[in-house]
Length: 330
Image 1 (cartoon, rainbow, N blue to C red):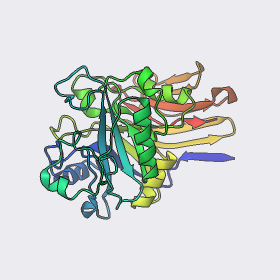
Image 2 (spheres, rainbow, N blue to C red):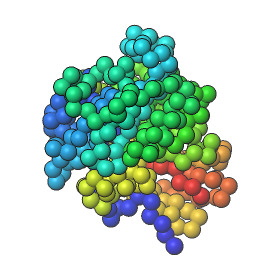
Image 3 (cartoon, rainbow, N blue to C red):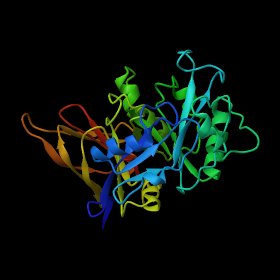
Image 4 (tube, helix red, strand yellow):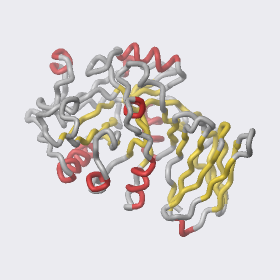
C-alpha cells in the first residue's frame, strides 16, 4: 500500500509566512506587499506585523490569500530594545489565526508595543488588562498555551538571531513550528539556516514542523529568499490552515519538491534539479545520494527502518540552496 505525503495531484501554493508592513516597522504597505509577492509567484502571505493582529482579508482574491497573524517578542529585559542591547536574549513567536477573522490581541502589552501607529492601536481588539510577559520557559509556555487556547498556532522564530540556545528552547512546549531559515537574519550576517534546531525538538520527542520566512522589512534584499510550498486542495483559508496544521507542506530557499510517497519500507522523492538528496533520522543512520559530475538528480529512493523513529529529506541544489521536507514518524 502506498502512502502519499506530498501529493502531485493537489496544488502547491507558494507562501511567505513572515513579513512586516508599514503597520509596524516595514517599508511597504500591505497593498504593496501583495503586489510584489504576487509578481514573484506567491499565493499566500502572512503579514506578521509586530505586536498586533490585523485582518488583511480585503487584499484576498482568487489567486491570493492573507493569513491573519502577528509576531510578538518576549524579552530578557522588557524595557530594552534589541536594536540597542545587542547581547539581550529574546524569544520571538509568530501567531497564526485558525480563523481569518480572529484579531483578538489577548497578548497585548503596551511596553512591548512601540511599533504600531496610534491609529492602529486604537482599533485593536485587546483585553481590559495588559498581558504580563515573563522571559523564560515558564512565561513563554504560558503565552504558547494561551495562544493555542485562543485559536492560534505558534511558530518559534529565528533562534540564532534571538541568541537562544538549546538550554533555552528545549523547555518550550506546544509549538507548531520552528523557523529553520530566515532571509532577513541570513542576509544581515547571522547564518539562520539551521536544521539542527528542528532536530533538537524532534529528538526531545516533540511534534514540530519545519517553517521558514523572509521576515522582510522591505529593503528588498531581505525579500523572496525562502518560501513554504503548501500542498492543499484549494486556495481558501480553511484549506490552507488545515494543510499547515497537518504538515502538508515543505520549506525551501530554492529547490522544488514535486512528490513524496512511501510504499512498504521505502520512501521516494521527486524534485527539481539537485546535486544531492539526503535522508536523515533520529539517530546516526543517514543516507545521501549525489549527482554525477555534470548531471543532476531528480528523484531518489531510501529504505526506511523501524529503528529510524523518524525521517526527513533534504534536497540541495548546485547553489547550496535547500528544500526540506517535514519529519515523518516511522
